[in-house]
Length: 92
Picture 1 (cartoon, one colour):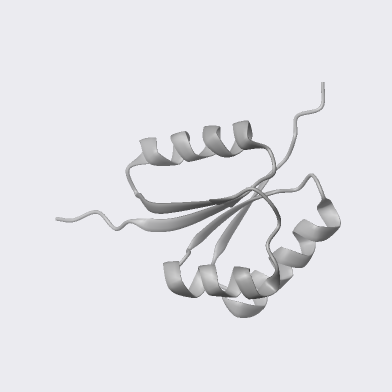
Picture 2 (tube, helix red, strand yellow):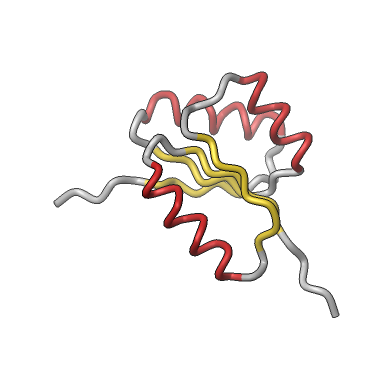
């Protein structure tokens, strides 16, 4: 029996956070390709990435909350079935 793999995208300007998320996702075994973007993409790039890579899971850094919300709205408009998780900095 084969395990279904999910393709994932991580959008984070924090390379350490993106690396930690990527490592944890790889550990799960159910994640296939992982695309990491170090900046919030334009709608054109976002659309192309989701179509070409069949992204099913998005982890997005919410440091720039207004821009993150725009991207989430765009993703939801293109593919409402994509699972979205927020990456938020921990307040100390």
